[in-house]
Image (cartoon, helix red, strand yellow):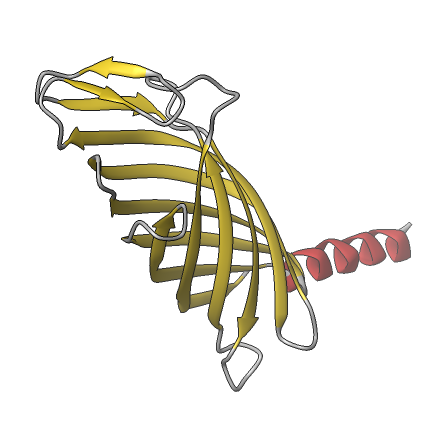
Length: 184
């Protein structure tokens, strides 16, 4: 019985000794439809569940501008990230957030699909679910020095304006640095 208890304690310790917590921050280009410029700031809490697998929780604050409106976005994502020995990483996440648009038109805005919104020169806020896929590469020289460059295509909706069958999409390209890495 004593050996079984020692074995269980050793296995329990080894499971948590592998786990790490990382605090990351990053900045990137947010291109709605690629060509409409913007910026995204991200803060991320990443919990490693194996040496090469993590579940990050990321909050993004973004701004982008197109010919019809300026938009500020805030969303929170969670998903999966897989690291490879070569330095490559792949990720996917889902998120929810808010989008606030300040239209540059006078009273009505009509998009390419004929949907319109009366705004009267006011800021319009909508609910913004999103889906993101991504690929990154660790340019850090050591395994613990995580400096990740990434590209993330993003599909998102403005449910206060367009229905689910007409999403927006953006391309995010940026850099993330790990500020703190802590083993449990």
